[in-house]
Length: 171
Image (cartoon, rainbow, N blue to C red):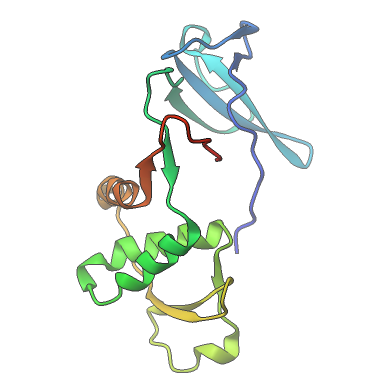
């Protein structure tokens, strides 16, 4: 099983130019190894030439603007209910599988105990809902690169909603 690594959020500072990143400005984030940890540095597009030597990964992103919509994730109970409600729809199997992986990463569900998996088909996994101990069977799916963007957009549409202007956004 892959380990989980803690990465800092955007520093909102250009590492190379030592200046704040501006609203709407494009920037690059780079993850590098530092001993046993990973370190994140952000670079303005104007200072970016290529990833620094030893970079593990990098991506391009845009600083939010004050007018940008703030989106919040649905509450955990809603996410678990959504996972259950997708079961009778075989055409949603890939979305359901990705949702289960996301919920596992957020530690809302976990793989069920081995003793609970005896009658599962080869392409299924049984998960346990941490909050109530119930189990759900999920079909495991292969997802191609060409499908990933469509599935991501579909899940974002289902899982996120716009925060009210006076609502605190907790990420």
